[in-house]
Each structure stands twice: as structure tokens, then as C-alpha cells.
Length: 233
Ligand code: GLP
Image 1 (cartoon, helix red, strand yellow):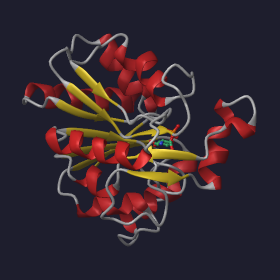
Image 2 (cartoon, protein in one colour):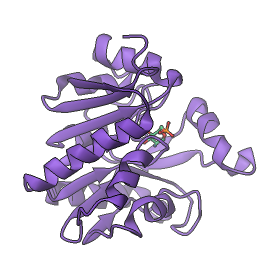
Image 3 (cartoon, rainbow, N blue to C red):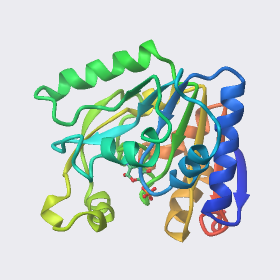
């Protein structure tokens, strides 16, 4: 893994943006995108730049089950607010968390990924080492699937919702095998509460108990960390 240590999320966002710009220059046209607070500084730099994605495709990692696209807490809403409204893509895909048949929706999403191999995938990481919504214990050969969120993830997400009972308990997520197919993976992590997950991801065994550790088996991973997230390495 190529590890870049920066002072803070703003500097990290700039490094992340540079990887997007370089990928575009080298012909990348399918971008795997993530939500959460972590990629926001990268998206801000992209929005402020003259990069043009109108001929590119985006494929997001995950979406909550049960939230409509116009729900302010949905990942669809997040992506429009933070990136797509300012930088439209030719086509942007997210899982449909309102699909009546979630198994069929997962299959549809796998076909989208198979038809559009991801050139650059951006990732955050959960405090328990999850990527996308692949919680500890998720099989390493998983494709897009329905996920029951862990209490740790529900608690971490609760700050965004008015009432705790409104926090979704399920999601649709790209699987670990889907993520591993990306040609280049960029994982960003900021803050001390990510330090244990980062240590496990880089120095621990490659184990389903810490989903991000699967990235040790990928030949082209860039990790951008602030000093706090890197403090236990
Ligand atoms: C959610 C998302 C992940 C994200 C994680 C961390 O679980 N599904 O993609 O990496 O949150 O979020 P944050 O970047 O806000 O710390």
C-alpha cells in the first residue's frame, strides 16, 4: 500500500483530488464513489476544479434500505448535494434502497459493476474497519448484498438523524469482491477514532473480522491518513 500522511482532512482532500485528476488524465472514466464525512474534502476540491465528468460514469458503494432518493439522509441525496449537482456525470449509479425486491436489485447492481469496471474507487473506513457497508464477518468473496448494520455503525450514524429510531438498520452494499475488482483504490481516513481500524488494516492479519484488511491483497491501493488516523502505526 502506498501510504500518504497529511496534516489534516483539507490536505488529504487535495491529495485525493490529485489522484482523481491523474486518473482522468490517464483515461479513467468509471469512478467508484463513497459517502460519509471522509471524502467531502476531496469532493470539495473536485467541485472547485475544472475537472469535467460529463463523459464519466460513477458507481456508488452503498445506500440505506428504506430511504427515498430525496430523503436528506439518503446517500443519493448526499451525492447530489456534495458532488453531482456541481459536477454532473454522464451516468451516476446508486443502489435503490426502495426496490421491492432487494435481491434482484443487488443482482442488477452487480451487472452494472461488471459492465463498467471501476478505474478508481474512493473509500472511507468505519471505526470497526468496515468499507462500504461490509461489516466485520462479511465474506471476502461477497458481491452486492443486503446488510444488517451493526449497532456500532447505527450509533455512528445516529448523529445525522433527529430520532434514533429513524436511523436505518439495513443497507445495500457493494461486496468486498466487488470493491477488490477496482483497478485503483484510494482509502482516506481522518481522526483518532479511525486509528485502530487503520492499524488493523495495514499491520494486522488479512481477516474478515476487519473487512478493510482485504486491501492488503490488492496491488494498487493508496491510503491517505492524517496524523491522528496514522498515530497507531
Ligand atoms: C458509513 C459508510 C462508509 C463510510 C463510513 C465512515 O458506514 N457506508 O462508506 O466509510 O460510514 O463514515 P465517515 O467518513 O463519516 O467517518
